[in-house]
Length: 145
Image (tube, rainbow, N blue to C red; front, side, top):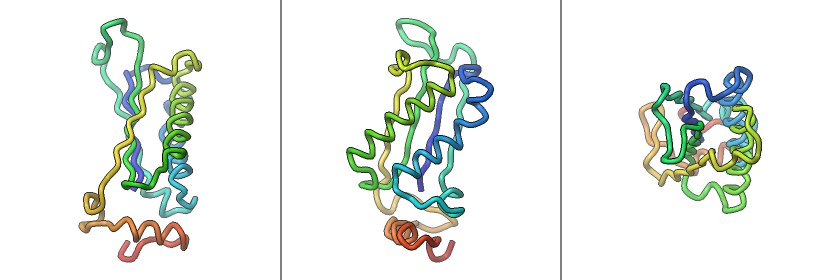
C-alpha cells in the first residue's frame, strides 16, 4: 500500500520534472519497500502531486519554493537503512524535478508515516499486511483482489 504525496508550489517543477516525478517517486518507494516490480504492485503504488497556488507556501525567511514528500507505508516495512535510502533518493529526485542542486536539499522534507495493521482498506475490506508480504514473496496479488 505504498503511497507518496508531493506538495510543491505551482510552477516550481520543470516541465520535464512535472511529467516524470510521480512515477519516479512511486518506483523509488517500491524499490525501498522491497516490493516486486510487477503490474499489481505498480498499480497500488499511488502518487499524488499537490501544487499550491502562488503565495500559499513561504517561510519566515523567504519565498523560495519548498517541497514536502509524504510517504505512507505499513508499520515496520522500512528499516532505518531503507528509510535513509528512501529519504536520500526522494530528495534527489525532487531536486532534479525542480531543476535544483544539492545545495537546496534543505528545501525538501520527507515525512514517513507508518500505517498500523488494520488501518488500511481497499476494495471495501481491510487489507492485511501479511497478505501483501506473501504476495510480494510469491509474486502474486493478494486473495480477493
